[in-house]
Image 1 (tube, rainbow, N blue to C red):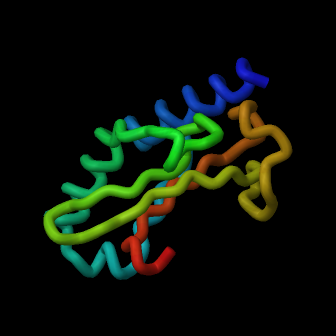
Image 2: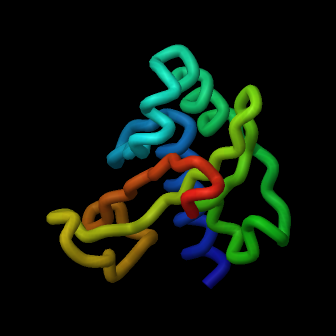
Length: 109
């Protein structure tokens, strides 16, 4: 299990820091903040490194809360199959898993 968890964490970190290898969804309220702030939000997601037992109990780096300017935001990585219509059966296998990183305002979660 630790090796599988480490693989999931590494895949999540690679996706989150490069935004390559999955889909990124920025919710409507975040998009309405404008392109300059959305760029800052994406940078904050890529740079996020505040993992602890409280926000990452499974040590998979798939959720984070952060602030940009006066806005509180969250990101979450979900794991779907390749058609993106069902949950993946193996989160550690990138050949059958589509990672979806969703960024939302904190109060929407």
